[in-house]
Length: 211
View 1 (cartoon, one colour):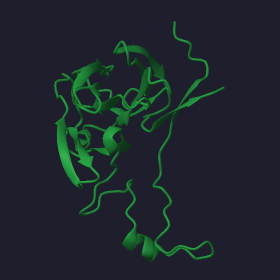
View 2: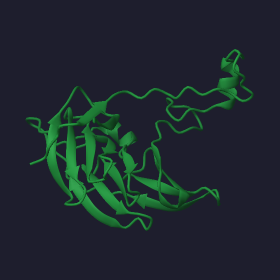
View 3: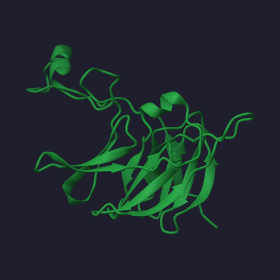
């Protein structure tokens, strides 16, 4: 039986980070024009030439894994060489209905486990989370997520969003935006442990282990 005491899940909207422009000194007044010309936050709305809502996570071998907006997958970048070294497509065989506007970002959650041994990526089209070994990125598991059942319609995706882990890497939590819930998964057994009801449309999620 799982002891949930001490594990607190939090889902909240993440705002753009506050970034100060070049040449900033403590007493200097912030200049929005400098910010607009020199700084490009990661969390931004649609803008020509820029990517919106990119989720990134540092992993093994000094690689950065970025979710690609639109395509159902992610790319691996080599910082030193400044190039893309691998592109990974996620499965699309979830057998669920997906609302059209969700296809703008069919893969929206990605995370490296704290032990740096595995990478976990959610897919709305597969309605699942896929686990990869690091650093070779071989598929080592897949866990299906609950479906949204609506009368008169085909089963629909839970719209999995962000992921978070327990510090020991033994559990992963995934927010299900369409189901107002969070799925807890045993990362060793590769199976669902619980579906936890939460507030409306959870997306951003984090884990806090209380003393």
